[in-house]
Amino acid sequence: MAKQIRVFLDNKPGRLEKVTGVMAAKNINVRAMLISDRGEFGIVKFLVDKPDLGIVVLKDAGFAAAIKEVIAIRLEDKVGRLHEMIEFLSSKGINISDGYGFAGQAVFCIETEKWEEAEKLLRGHGFNVLTDQELYEI
Amino acid sequence: MFRDKAIETIDRASLDKLQLLQLKTTFTTALKTRFYEHRFRKTPIKSADDIHSLRDLEKIPFTTKDDLRACYPDGLLSVEKSRVVRLHTSSGTTGMPTVIYHTQADLDNWTELVCRGLTACGVTSCDVFQNMMTYGLFTGGLGLHYGAERLGALVIPAGAGNTQRQLQLMKDFRTTALHATPNYMLHIMLKLDEFNCSLDELSVKKVFLGAEPYTENTRKKIESFYQIEAYNCYGLSELNGPGVAMECVHKTDPHIWEDSYLVEIIDPETGQVLKDGEEGELVLTTLKREATPLLRYRTRDLTRIHTEPCPCGRTHRRIARITGRSDDMLIINGVNVFPSQIEEVLMKRPEVGTNYQIVVDQHESLDRLTIKVELYAKLFEGDIKDLERLRDAMKHDMRSTLLVGARVELHEPGSLPVSEGKAKRVVDLRKEV
Image 1: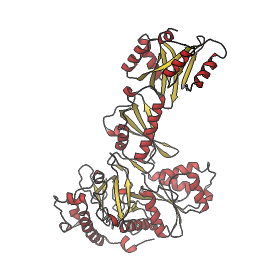
Image 2 (image 1 turned 120 degrees about the horizontal axis):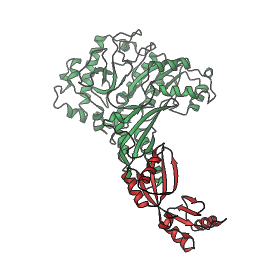
Image 3 (image 1 turned 90 degrees about the horizontal axis):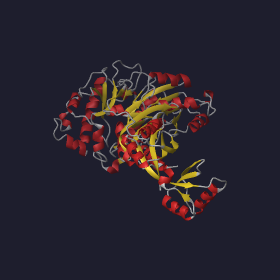
Image 4 (image 1 turned 90 degrees about the vertical axis):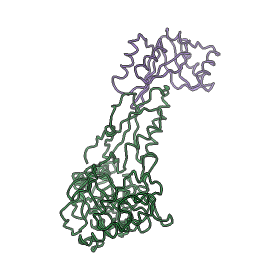
């Protein structure tokens, strides 16, 4: 199961820069990033090559940070495959709370409260769910 | 115009005599409460017989808001519950509000004082009086309501807020007198165009301002914009509410009704009584209250007593505009808020840290309260919905504790300025009104 780092930040200039700076200094490579704005604060989600180290260095630097599970699926890069996957999850009653894709690699990351169930279902249905190592090495 | 010319223009010697008599009565009444009965066991003054002159008042210890809180709910009740006809509470800290009980005689006297003040400003039974203060536990609404009713005015119990409806009522019923906070009068000013209302459609001649401090400039601004007279009212819930002191037509600061209240100004640091004209903290003793008598109650309001007589002929002395507080109380849209109440709400939530900041500013002429708190890093689990729920829950708690709305903002750990003293946590950006 892939891990995502989430950081709570004040919604103002200079804060994100501190986070990326801390990770760069520890040689942590950011593979994907997503910002959710909620007024005075935001949550920034990162996929990095070394999430376990990442969370430690961020917490040491004083950030409110946490690890959350995400499911990364490699899809065939052609019309209809993404739809097929989403249709499958919805037929099983799995709600996707957030998601983002990597163009070119055709990797789609999804967040859901029922992540354990979702992962099992996807694997059982023949979808290529990436291991954490596979994801970080993309 | 006088409501009761004999008492309003009473000479000082007769007033002194009356006050001494009433003070003795109040003291005897006070001894029937658990709080004062206990307090006066060991003091030089043990019964009304020990009071020989008004100067003996200084031998009586002060009563504070903390005493009132500690007495909640009935430590300061001096009559049988069956004689009580109403109570008013104000929000308090540590879950402890303050409560004031009223007998029918207490309410009658309060109403009479309000009526007297309204009459002194020329309100008559021909007036249509629109009361734009909050009704309920807050004393501002009911206090003026009953006073204006007793006078025979047509009272519209509009309550606070809903500007569009307020303007409609003013137009439809040709309202001639208003009761509002100064900020609300300024707010309506900004909304006239939006609600398609022009001043020529209104018949308002007077407004009674109260519940929050404001400057003489604000009064002038309200008067010149609306082309009306604005009168200053002073009061606090512990001493009934509005009507403790009210201006007369001369608008030279409120007359404090000395047949009902004994007035002292003290040095807030030493407790020493100051001379008329010197600025200090206002201390009041109730002279007519039956259910909840208060002896030397520290209002925390800073003011002074005017030494020169008022041209209206009333002998009851006038208190100057309140210049500040000797504690850290904030007044938000007329509602009293203590930073300690805010702190208490925040400290119930383990998800937020101990550092916080209270910011007060203005939006469309109304006060706006924002509470900034830091998220506690160790309890962050990464879920944005949890944070929104936390923020909403704190907003809800603030409203139910403070009785006034507040915005709550979540900030990063360590991002708010660390303050040593309580006062530093408050940032008041309001322009002086």
